[in-house]
Length: 369
Image 1 (cartoon, one colour):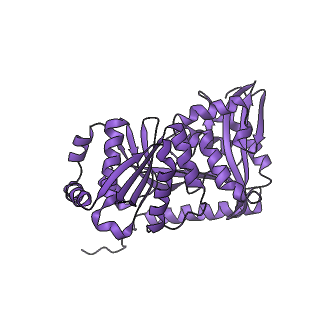
Image 2 (cartoon, helix red, strand yellow):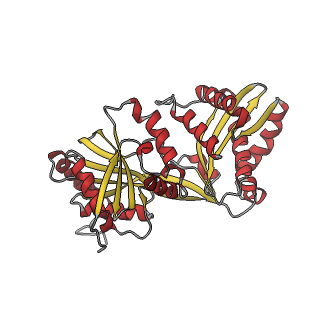
Image 3 (tube, rainbow, N blue to C red):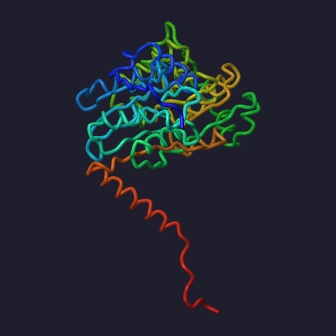
């Protein structure tokens, strides 16, 4: 067990309040995934949680030992299914969450942090952290540390995640796609161009605000429900442009945008974040044509190692991606609270029910001859 003498935990209400050493740890975490970094959290707080400050208590818990930052755990306290709960600082905009952890630490090193989290939770019934990579060290260490703090910790499936390791150039990648995809691209590219269509990729600069307006116009005419937090995506687009991550794809018919996609390119990966198209132009397949352009740019120009469709098992993703993995969540119940005990009882009952359903049927007493 690691030596934990001299450990202390400080809490901060906003990522901008963090001291330099904690920000440095978040910066290193951001090199794995942009959603682990300070800029992502600032946009999420300012344009989502700050809209309901009384209902969402944002906290950054910083663990130090002998002056060295070991961990930064972003959370939000709120009223959940079991009453007061503490969750990861994430929501439906988040494709991946993880605490920022220093190299070489063990679960026992995080015990002062999870104990402090439990004390500051004001008798929260449950602690939820999602979505996470179940194969990551952050997932394993956090799960173990929550258990060491006396919480009953369980993992659960969150969603499927389709992705493509890039090992070929665009031309060879396209050859491996289905005949239907290749035919759609070839046939509709000619029709789209003949009707005055064009494609572009905006990365920032003078065209940024016009590109943002075009994206919003397409989204408003698409099948998608309106954004519940209208400033989050514009904030994300401007953030990504500032950091050099933005690839905003647009398909135009004349002066009218008919498809739009937000891709985020960083750390050798292209994340496909948002897609929308004008349903009135569906026959021209502007979304498919735009995806092809974005794929070609990511593979041949940005030379990424991976393309990631992020959240969900939508059928169209398998046409472009060859591999699937899963994202999980952690839920930790406090058995010393009535609501936590209730949540734990329901969890145990669900697990028992799943085991019974998965058990093969017993053989008949008198099987037929």
